[in-house]
Image 1: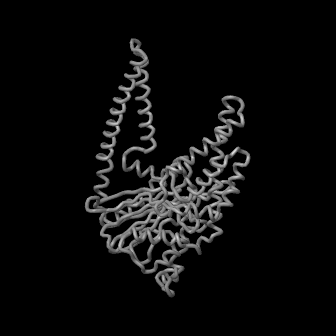
Image 2: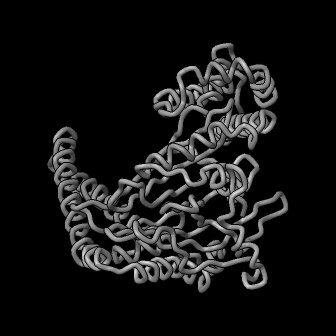
Image 3: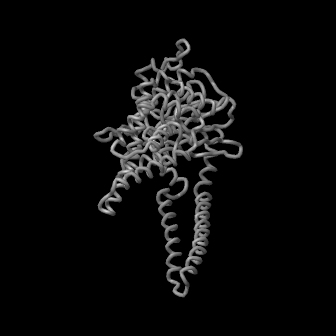
Length: 438
């Protein structure tokens, strides 16, 4: 995990990232505090990039991919930040030398096998639940459970919209190329269960959906968050785009634009935390987000129970009259609760968020950087003084991007001493043919 933040006003955007990375292996996990997650996307133009989530993409470190792209980009520039984002995703789309067919196939099989095991696990949970209740289960029950679980999951995928970057023919192309491999995985995972031909077809459609759609309730360990921020040539104010990137299958990048933000004449300041963001949310709203959720859930439940208790204790009412009263009271309770939550939201905004955003809109570049570093450090400090795993930590890298000065490092760690390696700085802008060395 990690903690990253972007703070923008009309003058510049500050980016800050910690250095912790968690390596998970079969025998356990190890946390390192020297990872690089913040980079300039161009050596010559005011655009930066931050990475969180998976440190690798298709088995290649993100740092390597970004620096290969930077060499590929060279001095090329675009009018808008969106065009930089499109060019970077096109590079990953067409990066077959980076991601050969063998790697794409391995990624596909690993992903499909893992998801089939997930479905199998849900089936087994339902079976164990029936055995726990009845003491036994029939083959007919198992067949029904299997059908219901697969159908329910298939329905969810069917309702999910295909990613705009994925062509309509992508699912069909995957079956043409990897259909036999997917068939083998279906047999391996579900061979002991009674699977009809129709269910096998649904499993096949689920498998292809993994590489055509993003489902909000399905978390993938392969997903990387990518933040691209800065200015295009014609951009007056900074902007930012957040992408969720999963992999490449059949030379098509599976990614989704999760959110975007931009400074304008009407909107003069923004603070956007990424990954582990609870301490920034606490700072900005005056309440821990988990505590707020617990509080709202408890009050909602209390209102529901209160309505039940009132109606059940009115002895002179018939059952029908009680039901009518209960329905009316629940409607009133929900309105009261909605008003209560709205008032608290307005209070948080007026008392905590708005004053901070007013000041952020006026901060000079160095203060933007200091604020970004402090907010990341706040998350790191919380992990350090509690019993939670220190998944945020290490040196904090900070950069400021402005229209006039470009990408400027405020704080940056090196795994070497720069004064002992003058050739590193000397080669940074050195050109060799159409590419550059670093």
